[in-house]
Image 1 (cartoon, rainbow, N blue to C red):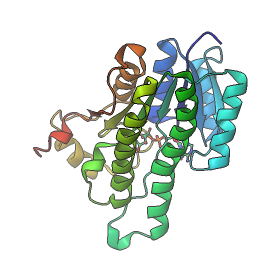
Image 2: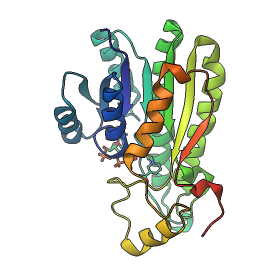
Image 3: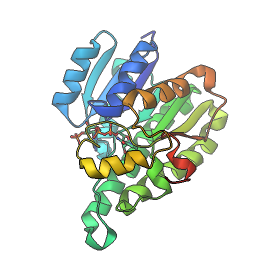
Image 4: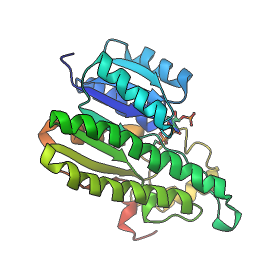
Length: 245
Ligand code: NAP
């Protein structure tokens, strides 16, 4: 296959779907990975199967991740860009949080991204070429009710920095995009009163759109930016500045 291949996880909806669409527009052939088959297939149908395909996988399952990469080897023979976007929340104050909800969020957000990175790194090291973009969150700086999620996303940033050190000499860049409050199915469940408060605390007084994240990923997925590595880019309307309301 002539086109560069990009794998995007959690691409059935929300931010991942916008990233997949943007990378197709940039000229990549995009493999949309999601555990939600219906959403993934609908996304490919709407994007067009000339430039995109769907693969169902749970990124926290080691066997499924390995199978995904073996299939990619067979069908396309290359992986040029990996975007680790799939992620979940299970929010609660720590005194109400079950250990199972801590484990699950770490298992998907951190271990799942690590499993995907390992398979991509093996292939990119061999080819001496690639870009990995991991989607963390501004919440790694700390959010009440998100001890599990903040820890998982802090882990993603630490992992990405270490991986950037390991992969630098193999011409593989590893960067992080840390979104703030973005309008997606994940945030659609936030009650209006709480959402209004969150928006009021934003320097921009707005919520972001999935496309805001997709533009930044597009920049980092380009071979033209491959001298940038180990960095974290906030796409958060300035919330990470930390000045409050
Ligand atoms: P979303 O609307 O919930 O979409 C995420 C997609 O990933 C869903 O289709 C989901 O399937 C899938 N997924 C979840 N776990 C998976 C797994 N183990 N294996 C494969 N696919 C899986 O989420 P989003 O808001 O677009 O968020 C995307 C990423 O951005 C996440 O990493 C999130 O932490 C991060 N982020 C989001 C915001 C925000 O405000 N939205 C802010 C900061 C960071 P199911 O629906 O079946 O779970």
